[in-house]
Length: 48
Image (cartoon, rainbow, N blue to C red; front, top):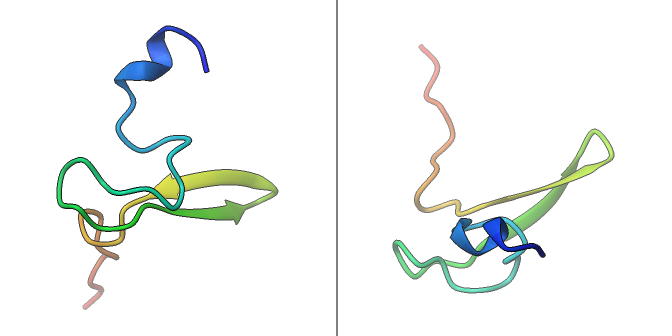
């Protein structure tokens, strides 16, 4: 990771603790690319 990557709260932290809520950061592969998110902080949208 480079200098500016230190400001990222989630990227590259799969399996580690979320700095916002303490939940576990998940890494998924979507369209052949990796994505990281906290399932507690970023809930799935509710459709009507």
